[in-house]
Structure formats: structure tokens, C-alpha cells
Image (cartoon, rainbow, N blue to C red; front, side):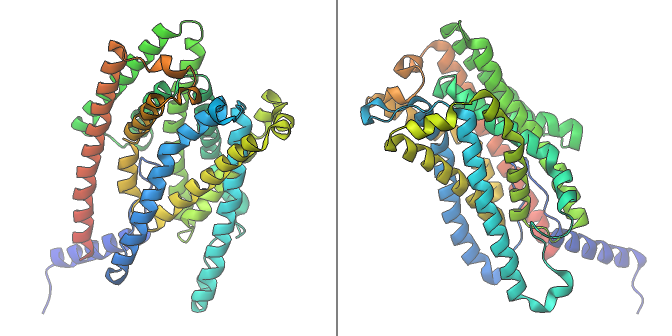
Length: 396
């Protein structure tokens, strides 16, 4: 019996699509990897582990700006002095994360070699595999942008009020989409674009409110915080392009390895800046009391944990859903800050409680930012569910 040509072509296209979906995992707009369709027998275990990692990831994402605010401003009630050296603190956090990611990459490599000795013809890739310089060259631009994101974010938080910083950072996704459209051809939907416009309008109103309240230093402070959002957009686009190139040449390269190269290169790129602009940072750290040193060390630990948990989420296929939740993480961040101010801990925020006054501009900007961020997250979630069902249909 002969099959029609159209049936043969359709079957071949189905198999090609199946193979493509099995091997290729693109980078999403939230800096993470798309979902990997796991075998059914391990789906429940992956889900449980993924949910635990997601909760840890989200908690750390919420408390990171709060921690940095404590580090830069101190807590007089607890006799913890301020360590307002954001570039040095950022470099220490990134260096520790690089060490942890290298250890995870090495463990992942040797575990795979021991588990699957029959596949030695196709050895898994890791940080010390051949092609080290090529990987560095491919990721260097993304690493430079990532170093800028980390430095500008922490410096921005040290020169502006906490809630204004958090609200401005909420506009990050708008810059990601703005750069992804012309460079990668990723065009947002009409509803998604409208949500981002509302989000940007809310951010502009918040910036205007800050300008009216702080006319002496607003240009520099606002520029630094907005620049961190712009750098995030550039970083995401560059990382996506770099990862596509890496996977085209080496399909076995892991999420952990890419994360290590990104972090290690960014650490090297950032090193000259604290040496130039914060020469007294390390001597000052040595003179701080034990409480302040513990505060700095805690930041190093939670940053390394945050990067490691992010890698775990990419492995256990929950990066998309967590990324969507991450777009509205500023809501619990703001709620937590208001609670701390209400119980008398306003000194841990720059400007104290005076910058938390509910002005009309601040309230309207907050509402628009909330509506825009939640609207875009809802649009992305709906698109993600539709795409997941389509891919499951291809693989069935």
C-alpha cells in the first residue's frame, strides 16, 4: 500500500518537530530556560522539587532588595552600621556565586560521566571542556551587560528610596521586550504591548513623584535606576542570542555551565570598578564590627543560593511560571517594606519613613504599575499555557 505524498511529508515534519522540541530549549524573556518536557514517570518528583525550589527562589527574590537596603543603610536599632559600598558588595556576591556555580557544574559533569559510561563518545560538556575561549567569546557581551545590571541595581538602591527603586525596577520587562523586538524579532501581542505601556506610564509617574520630593539629587539617582532597567533589557537579549549559538555548536552544554561562564566573566569585568571608585571598601570591611561583617557575608550566601536555585528551576522545568511570578514580585516587596516602616524599622530604608508618604502621584503611579505588571503577567501565562498544549500535541 502506498501512502500519499502529503501524509509522508506530514509524518516527516512531525518527527522533525519532535526532535527539535526534544533537543532545543530556547531562552525566555525572563532570563531563564524554557520548560523541558520530562518523562511521565518523573513528572511528579520534578514537580515537587520544582515547587520547593520555586518557593525558595521567590522568597530570596523578595528579600534581596531589602537585604541590600539594610546593608547600605544599616539598622541603628540593632547596632548594625551601614556598609555603603555597593560595588564591592556586588563583586563579593558575584565572586561567591561563580565559585558555587563552578562546583555545581563540576559535580554535574562527573555525575553524568559516572552514570552513563556507555555514552563516552558524546561526553557531557562542562566549564573545563574544549572550547573554553570560544565560550568566553560567545558570552562576553552578555556578561558585560550582566555586570552592569548587578552594579547599577545595587548602586541605584543605595542612592534612592527603597519603594521608588522597586517600582522603577518593575519596568524592567518593558525594556526587555523593547530590545527583543528589533533584535530577535520577538513581537509582543496587542494586549501585552498595552500592558507594558501602562506599566511604563506608572513608572514615569513614580519617577516624577521622586523628582518633586528630591530636587537636589534626582537626575543622577533616577538615571542610575533607569539605566539598570535598560541594562537588563540588553542583557536578556544578548544572553538569548549567546545561548542559541552555544547550543547550535554544543547541544550538550548545560544550564549550569552557561550560568557559570556568565557569572565568572561578569565578575572579572566588574573587578576594576570597586578598585577605582571604592578604594577604602576592603579596609573599611576589616574595621566593621562582627554584626556588619555577618551582614555582608549573609548577602554573599543568599546571592550564591539565588543563582543556584535559579539553575535548579531551569533543570526542573518551572522557570517559565516563576519568571511570570517574578514580574510581580515587587508587590510583596513593597508590602514587606510598608510593614517594616509601620513597626518602626524605617531607618533601614534610605530617607526613612518620610519617603513613604502617600502622595497622589505616588499612589497613581503605584496603581498603574500594578495594573501593567499584572496584566502582562496574565498575558504571558495565557500564551505559555497555549504553547505548552501545542507542544504536548506535537510530542504525543
